[in-house]
Image (cartoon, rainbow over all chains, first blue to last red; front, top):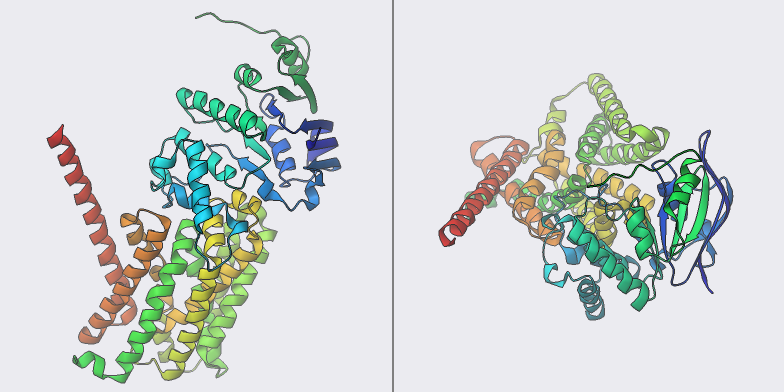
Amino acid sequence: MEKVIEIKNVTFSYDTKMVLKEVSLEVFKGDFIGIVGPNGSAKTTLIKLLLGILEPQQGSIQLLGQAVKSFDQWHRIGYIAQKARDINAGFPATVEEIVAANLYMQTKPFKFLNKEQREKIDEVLSIVDMVDYKKRLIGSLSGGQQQRVFIARALVNNPELIIMDEPLVGVDVASQEKFYGLMALLNKSLGITLAMVSHDIGVITDKTNKVACLGNQSLFLHDSKSFNQTDYIKQVYGEGISLLHHQH
Amino acid sequence: MPEIFTYGFMQRAFIAGAIIGVICPAIGVFIVLRRLSMIGDTLSHVALAGVAAGMLGSIYPIYSALAFSIAAALGIEKLRQEFKDYAELSIAIMLSAGIGLATIFISMGKSNSSIFSYLFGSITLVNLQDIRTVAILGLIIMVSLIFLYRSLFYITFDEEAARLAGVPIKRVSLYFNILVAMTIAVSMRIVGILLVSSMMVVPVAAGMQVAKSFKQTMIYSVLFGLVAVLMGLFISFYWDLAPGGTIVLSGIFILISTLLFKNIKLKVTANHIKATA
């Protein structure tokens, strides 16, 4: 099986505070992996390491068989950020302009988009069901709709891997269902490997095939089917903690 | 032909004005959307130091202003790395350095009357050498902007995604700062150093009221910039006022008109919806 992500013995500290200690992880082609963990468990740090924004003090990270340090094929990887840290809502750009921006590597300066590229934009917008909103300003859309535009933006380069950092923050429940439906389509029909950070453990284990739990500077990899929430709580918070269930 | 066009100096002012009316808002769109409005003010104050230094050393002031503001643009990037957590401090430091230097150079000079024409702009003093410099630099700026359009758009909208899409962010940002410095050097003869940054901001603010896409924002901003310059030059000529002020106030007039237009349109649509409901 082709390895899409390979993290080997990675250690990372912010100044003196170590947040990851000799962490390893392998993600294979076709996987949909959820990355979960309590606040401050280095979920976003892990994403930043994967994207080359941060560099580990020890260990190595490979994407699509190439070291992140010298990785130069970012067009093969899509990235979808948290809605919350998002762009300024008043930005005067249309959905079409934003998706087209990601064709940067394929467009020569002084040239307009060609027919093929315009068709590709329509194609990815129809995958996410946003083709009717092509000419609308990004600021006039709801959070869920904006998120789908960003998925289309990632898809326009035919990525093999899409990395997502809490993409559902600030997205309403109905749109979340639609989002997971779309993820299943990308993962199963288009064969795109997905890695998604989430804090919603209940939902994510339902939708993914693997779950990576971060906590106590470590990473534990589970099969989603055999994932046990009580074990998870013990692993990431330590023993001696129990869950309080409340009934509605 | 109306009297205004028969004067050689007015013809020169209109040529230079038209170039400025296009490039200031075109650069300004990216400045406003990147929330960098301060950088225009900073580089123009450094340009003032350059003008004063040029006059002291008998160098053509546009060249010395250009050299000073480009050096400042590079310096800001350098300082930004020193003050990583307080990036805006680098701009404030450069602004202080610019005003400090300008004050010293101006006080060292014997005749300060000509410095006023650079501060507030002038239409009667634009000579052929000015036109030539403005045209050449203006062309370089326009071609660079078209060349960088896609990368600047992406960086402005979402820097992180732009980096992942392969946009060389550092190089593009640095080159953009140099373009801002060039735009200031080109514009100060007509609009004046004190008001250059307004020309980069006001037409864009008006353009954003009516545009329905990024491309339209660019087109409307340039259009409003051009109209503001032409209106301002007419008023400046007939009422004998400094062109910098008349141009910028024309821009403000356009901005207020677009705001009124937008509000009236919103009211009309609201009433229409009420009436049909």
